Image 1 (tube, rainbow, N blue to C red):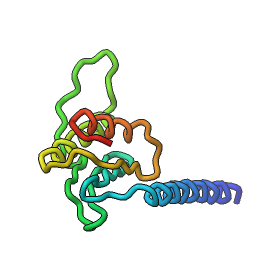
Image 2: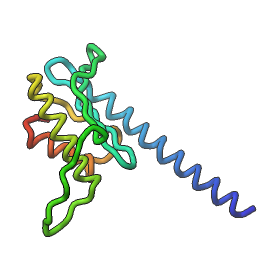
Image 3: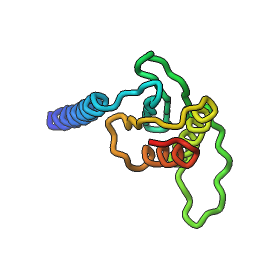
Image 4: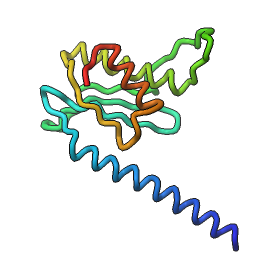
Length: 136
């Protein structure tokens, strides 16, 4: 019986953690709104992949989208400090979405981090998008 209680508490903790992230996301979305002049760059992070899309919330339309599922990564170079695959994927998605946006004439966006901290893979995507020409 003690094992069941332990498993149930782990499930409850995961449910609470997910609900807390969704609450943070709602709070962020109440302040972040994409317009024609300044669309929203929404980022979603799963366990293995990154997804980013630029959305015009007035029209309810996705203008540009990219994900790590679509991107072919070159082999890792022999750097002093090797970077993980997920970080490389995040940077590649940020660069790809920014290049596609700039090609469509979108320079300024608002960043929607999806209820997550601007840290790690989210920050890597954002920094790569900035380097590729987006302003936020």
